Length: 61
Image (cartoon, rainbow, N blue to C red):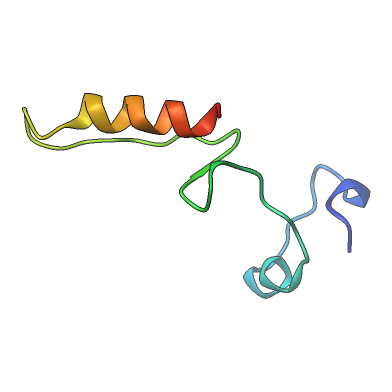
């Protein structure tokens, strides 16, 4: 089954999704997927900004 052949009102089971051969696009290799929402959270002064900047540099190299 191809995702592009499905109607809008069709749903896939978990097993069908796992069996699909889908290549995922990542912004940062196996860490942040393209076109998805990611949340970076931690206590204050833990290095979130530095980490986020490093990820951006990796993503656009």
